[in-house]
View 1 (cartoon, rainbow, N blue to C red):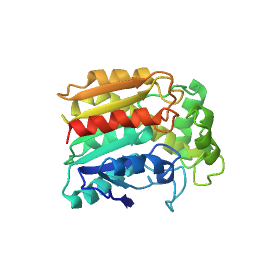
View 2: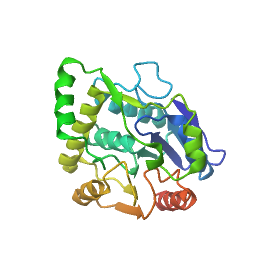
View 3: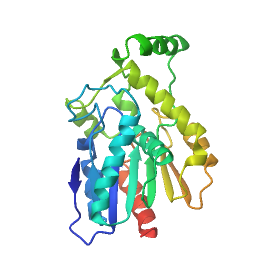
View 4: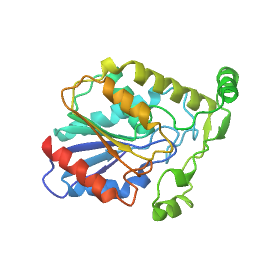
Length: 259
């Protein structure tokens, strides 16, 4: 886990949870923006990804992600400042699962294109095979089949990613089955979501996550303070898109309303 502290008087702490296959290094710009906005940032690499030493692209249980988030929230508490949880894509799903299954003292949550459904579903044959392999050979890996050009239109980000050896492009059968189960649980346990401020930032042209599933999940939540903001034409990684300055400006204004 790493910490980036604002040079200004801190308003609060943002804990960032990255998406599938990536790691903290892809969030340098976002971290800088949060620091400039007056927030400390805490972030670690999820198990099996980035700089972690365990098997890449594999988990035994989705709970490993939840436990990691719990650890980071515990570290953030040492600042004695309000804490916001920020999760992108699968990190958004992990954040949802974390706050619905465990009790945390956090002020609110921001989700960026949370993975509550896949834009492209595997065939029934592949899905059935994955269930069988999950029982007999859970660590068998296959290509994640996420085309970089479907994540962002930012050519500089795509060029950087093309030479980044820390990105994970193969995942295990167990990882996939745990992801599917986590999405199912998140969508069926909306009543457990804590009544704290929630902002969902969703890509309008998302080719990774099913944005309709995100909207349906959001509409099921009975919260006093929730907001859904969709950006037409933007790809999955809204904070890597050419329009990311506008996206972060909105996030900053949202945070300022809550501090």
